[in-house]
Amino acid sequence: MIRLEKIGMRYGSGPEVLRDISVQLKAGSFHYMMGPSGAGKSSFLSLLSLSRLPSRGKLTMLGRDVSALNRDERAAMRRQVGIVFQDFRLLDHLNVTENVALPLRIAGINQALIRSHVQELLAWVGLGENLDASPSALSGGEQQRVAIARAVIARPKILLADEPTGNVDDQIGLRLMRLIEELHKNGTTVIVATHNRILPEQFPHDMLQLKDGGIVQENDAEVLS
Image 1 (cartoon, rainbow, N blue to C red):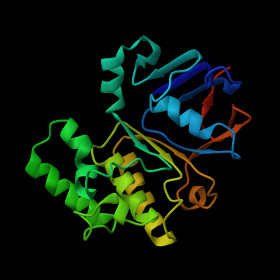
Image 2: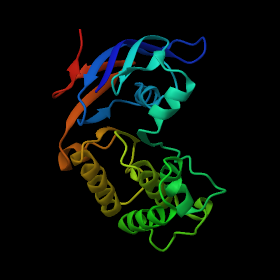
Image 3: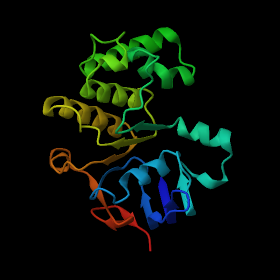
């Protein structure tokens, strides 16, 4: 479960970019997050990815109060969260296979098993011929697929995806969404930030609408009073 209670967040001494957000997302749920540019979608995801802490309020994830965790505990929780950033954040000194394998290596998985899983997943996303390529040699759409593969390879408890189909063609976009759907069916809580209104039609799920740093209830999201 993810629970936000009267959450506010700001960058430095600037105005709050998230204001009084109170919402509860059930474990294993799937939510689209939509809203105009500047509504706070990326800031919301940065909270849930533990990249930033709220300026005020209480954030509970996986049964823990995030503000009460020390650095090591936050790092351990972060390993249970898969993240797809808009700017990919691939490591250029690692090849495609090494980038995707990174979460499994951190988890201490056997090397032979890692290679097998990574090759299978990269083949699924259409990159089976790019195992040893440098990320800088790939197109934006190919880098997007590597980023998604890295985010899902360890079957995280929570998956956060910022415009996961924004840099790929329709066919690859459908394949990536099917991969995310499969992860969700196995119990992962999924939050997808997107401007693409076709995705909720093709893959119907609950929706959260952000506006001016606040959240509006849609579908079955439980907005707390």
